[in-house]
Image 1 (spheres, protein in one colour):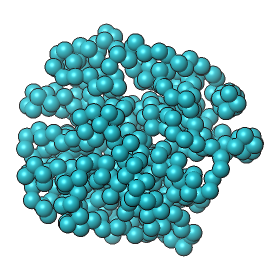
Image 2 (cartoon, protein in one colour):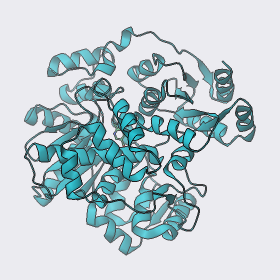
Image 3 (spheres, helix red, strand yellow):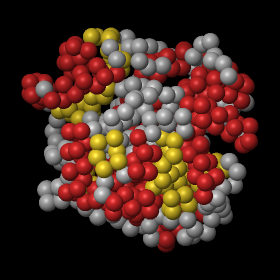
Image 4 (spheres, helix red, strand yellow):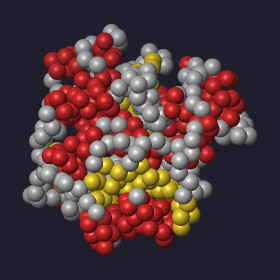
Length: 494
Ligand SMILES: *Cc1c(COP(=O)(O)O)cnc(C)c1O
């Protein structure tokens, strides 16, 4: 299996290992497989009998053909071990017999990013060997919270890789800061920036484009790499849980082989929902894909009108991982429906004017599968409350956006098809907002909110967040954004 850019079909094609190491295509496009592999009904039935790591290795093996079955199985067993994903990698919880919550947050940072970031570093480590790379990869990350911690947990103690994470000193929650400051592992570095998230991100981008920095690192046997969500190594593992959920429904006798299911995904960068679409293209019986947005409803508008327009207000919401105006992975859907030439033109228009409008045939093709709905802050809070009242289920703010969208779709269409809703974070990651949504008042203390929420809802704090206030703080550096390169140099020379 070879991979090519979304913007040029005639350009060079690459192996999976090269693509995972490189991240982005040279023309600025994203890597896509040159063909979509198939998943037959017989294969799905065989996967029903397998555990999650085996299901994952089988699906990944269809795309990563330059990795051996043994390598993939060993990596999947290590990534999705019971000790890392307590309670299972992607368990399904039935809310009312039609709507299911697919919980993707049982991993080591209690957020769905773990599903990809537990396996991708292992794939990268092997990619270095497969491509004959002698140097160590240094992963640089600017984070507004969740991705940084998930990347640290994923890359910690992985061979031939180091990771440095920068976060805005006053731009992350107390829980998020503690999660990063107490990070374990011998190859990790965490540093606060005296500035906001944009300062941290600009600083990282500057280091990435600095030729002198590259030369300096090269002399020390190091090269820069990114844990970005547009890397194919992060996307491929996300296909797995849709297949796995279908197997679980079959095993539970809730559906028969071949029955359709619908999927709702709380969407930011469009990676998770695009993975569901790939599962559908492979042959998994998925009918509708519901794209759920918060007040930043640029995708709802795009799916309704065919115009993507980022010239609009940006809203800070209580589902911050979806506060996004550029959904990078949408480019992959455009490629599959419009081809490389038109995708390149749309992306040029986006860069120059902040907007593009797809052709009528492209919009029609997309709307065969995709429909968009959004929930504002009030609706999100109401959904958290109602989900608790009606189903006794505690949903986080992102999951609530998706549950609201799924509900809107079902009310509008009367569609009784089983609906799998991706639940992307533990409610305890956003305990203060979840608490306020349920009880109408903000808890006085962010850390104490976890215990109060657990007591009042009779649910358990997930293991990664338990006793977080008592762990040893290892990283206390704070530097001005202009000194980030100095901090990286110090870390590399340590
Ligand atoms: C990253 C994230 C999302 C958005 O996923 P995309 O793949 O970027 O669309 C939704 N919810 C949570 C909790 C996330 O961390």
